[in-house]
Length: 235
Image: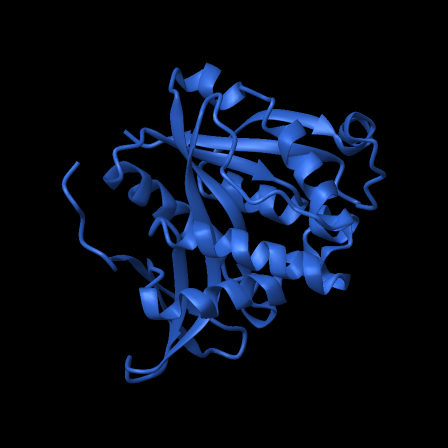
């Protein structure tokens, strides 16, 4: 496959706040000079809020955080992850407000990674490996490979504006340009699942967290009823 334009702008959108202010956003590939910034963004938000990582205790373990810094750095280097920036009134200054890490996932091939040594890392690996036993995406869409989400987070002050929805919509465009017919992944929280629905992704598998926890021998402390897998064909 020929090399594609990188970094590329995938979408622009505006939102009007409750006080009548217009906010302008742009979604792009994460440019190489901002790879470390995007990783720290995820480490500062995602692992401190997402039910999987809070259950594993990742944020409280500096060594576990470093394990994820290494893992996510390897993912962002694949150049398949997206960033959402807030533009200033002149369109010259940009503030990172959202990140969606993505990677190709192939049937029967577990993500390459350096085995974790921390308890938190081992717990999260257990959860992921259990979830990846589900073949619903491959089965439903008759594919052997798809663009998988590896984490999505939006800055607290810009939630409720549909940033996550726009990132997911742009992820479909990215998947298509990468020659992949499907994008999907594990959506762990009720808010993430609502975003997937609004982005016209389809829930193709769900399991109660109690049952999934029994499979992993982990007790999930969450108000979200079910773990869900969403996907969408992008042809």
